Amino acid sequence: QIRDIKVIASKLTAGDVRKLYSGENPKKNNNVELVVNGTFASNITGWTETAGTVSHDTGGDGGRIKVEGTSSGIGRSQNNVVIATIIGERYTFSVGVPGSTGYHFVHLGTTAGDANIKANLSLNGASGTYTYSFTATATTFWIQLGSSNSSVNYYDDVSLVEATTLVDFNP
Image (cartoon, rainbow, N blue to C red; front, side, top):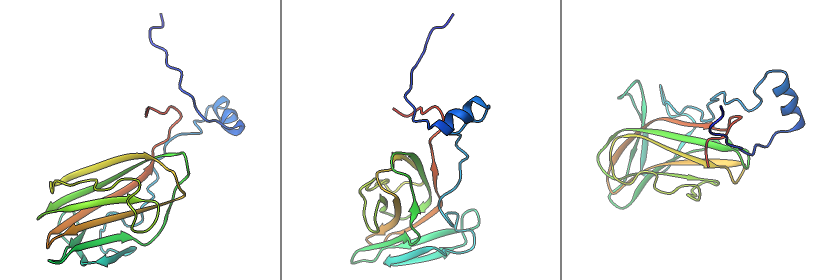
């Protein structure tokens, strides 16, 4: 007896359909990491200081990025390598905030310095892992890790993976 059936629209190409019939899942999420050096294991190569002071810190689980705001404003780091995304595909971003002495923020955007995907992913200064899923509206993705008003904040395990699978559980 079948009780619950859901019909979920999926965009499959002719090649995807051929793969399905041969037993392969063409939309399988392989969790390929798109952020280069998001663990900051030994350095912060690939990340650029745009304001305040940004440095590598050996605390935490072997390395993290330290972002310090100034008394007159904001400390900010953003990746200087454009992360390519596919318009219409779903992605999941996550970042660990292992320590904080004040106001930290994470902005996600489609151009450098922009926050049009998500502004202020975290506003409360608490430690933890923050996750945000979105559908790409552009072919580029930028991350800003920030600290303001003389705060010292740490970030680790910055990640972006494609979240699309054969069955999309996101509404």
